Length: 554
Image 1 (cartoon, one colour):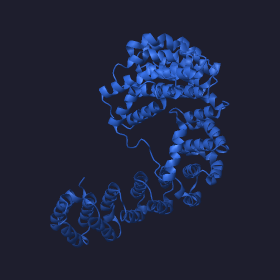
Image 2 (image 1 turned 45 degrees about the horizontal axis):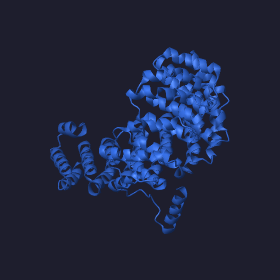
Image 3 (image 1 turned 90 degrees about the vertical axis):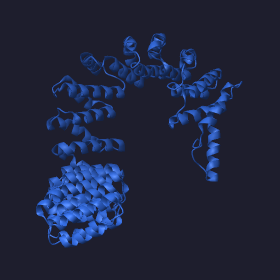
Image 4 (image 1 turned 180 degrees about the horizontal axis):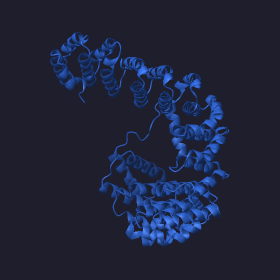
C-alpha cells in the first residue's frame, strides 16, 4: 500500500497536480464504498483505503448520523476475519473514532478481548486501547481481569497501553481502577522507562485526592530512585503543585526533593527542576541562585535545545529578578552570534532586561541585523523587552522609539503590530519627553495601517494627547486623511479626534468646523451623525458644553 502511495505521489509531482487525495470526498459516496466490507473474501487493500477515508472525514468535522455510523460500524466488524496486519490496525482506529457515534458498539468486545489476550503481540496494545474506548461503567467488571494481566505484562507496548487506557477508565469507574493499585505499583518497578512513567501517572491519578499519600509517594520514589527521566519530571511537577497549593516554603521536604534533582545525571530532569524552582511562588532571589547556576551551564551546551531552554527560562526570570540573572551576562553575550536566531533573540532581550544603560545602543544595533529573520512571536518578545527597558532607562526613549518605528514599517501580523503600538502608547503616556516623537511615529503608521482596531485606538490617542502638544495643527492632516481614505469605523474615530482639537484650540476651531461640515455628507450614518453633532456643538463655542460632550466624554 505504501508503495502505491509513493507511486501516486511521483505521478502527482510529474503532472504538477500534487495535493491532498482526500480533499474532495463526499460522505454519501464513501459510505456507499463501505459496502465493500461485506464482500467475501475481504479485499484488505481496498478496505484500508475506505477506512482511511472514513477516519479522514470524521477528523475534518464531517458529522455521521447514528444510523449511518451504526451500519458502517457493523459492516466493519466483518473485517476481523482478515489476518492482514495493516487492516487490523485501521479497524482499531476506526472503532475508536466511531465509538461515540454508532450504537451497540459493544458487539466487538469479544473480538477485541480475543486480540488483547492472543499471541499476536502487535495486535494486543491497540486492541486494549480500542476496548477501553468502548467500555462504559457497566462493563468495567468484565474487563477488570484482562486489564490487571495487561498492566504487568512483560511486553512494554502492552503494559503501556493498559496503563494509559486505565487513566481514561478512571472517569468511567474510578473505584474499579483503584482496585488495581497492586499491579500498578508493580509496573512502577518495570525496567522500561515509558512503562514506569505511565504507571506513576496512573498511581498519581488513583491517589490524587489524598495529599498525605501523594507526599509518601514522592518521598518513597525519591529515595528508591527511578530509571525513567520522564517519571522524575512528573514527580517534580507533583511536588511543585503541592508546594504552591499548600503554601509551603523552601524548607519543606518537597522543595528539598526538587532541589536535589538539580544534581541528577539526566539533563531533562535537571532542566525540569531548574525551571520549576524559578517559577515557584515561595522562591526568593537567594534560592534562585542554584537554579540560575544550572541554567548558566546549559547556555554553553553544544546542544541547541538546551541553549534555547536555558535562555528562554532566564528571559522569564529576568522580568521579576533581573539582578539574579546578571551573573549570566557574560555567557549570554556569547549567544548573540548564535546561528539559531531564536536563541540569539532571547539572549539579547534578556541582556536588555539585565544590562546597563551604556550597552543599550550596541544591543539594539545587533538585534537590528537579524530582526527580519525571526518570527513574529520572537519579535513580540523583543517589543516586550523594549517596553521594560523604556521604564528602566527613560532617557533612552529616542533610540528605542526609533527602533519601534522601524519595526512598525516592516511586514507583520496583527498581534505583532498591536504589541508595538501598545508599547509606543505606554511610552507616550509615561514619558512626557517622548510624547511628540511617539505621536509622529503613530501618525506615519496610520497612513498605511490595515488593522481597523489599531487605527481607531491611535486616533483616540491623537485626539486626547495631540491638542496638548506645542504644535497641534500638524496632526490635523493625518487625521483628516483617515476621513477621506478609510472605512466607516476609522472615519468615525477620526471625526471624534478632529472635534477634540476644535474644542481644545480656538485657533484651530474655524478649520475644524470646515472639515466637519464636509463630513456631514458622508455615506455612513454613524460618521454623518457624529460630524453633524460635533459641528453644531462646536459652532456655539461653549466651553462648558465642549468639556462635557467632547473633551471629557467617555
